[in-house]
Length: 110
Ligand code: FES
Image (cartoon, rainbow, N blue to C red; front, side, top):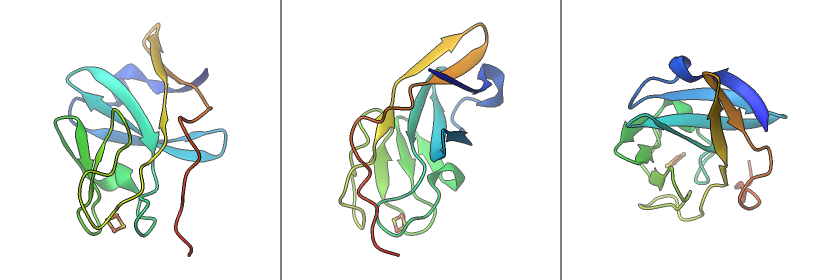
């Protein structure tokens, strides 16, 4: 597990972009529980940590696709490919993230 941030740095209903061994990851605080999801939208590579959190979903700020921060599933168009998620532990006021994602990230071509 990689120490990426203080728990208090990720406020409820908000996101924080962090680096996990070179991978951009968005931490998302849903009612006090921190989730970690890959930070690059599978539609056109926008950074999701600049997006909006609605319950356990995050909305891409560029074209509005929603992803589940729990499963990484793409919930609405224009995104169709899921995002990897990462296991999270909170220990001693710190957020720790497993650098091994749930599945490979199917990034679109640039
Ligand atoms: S870049 Fe995210 S929905 Fe288009």
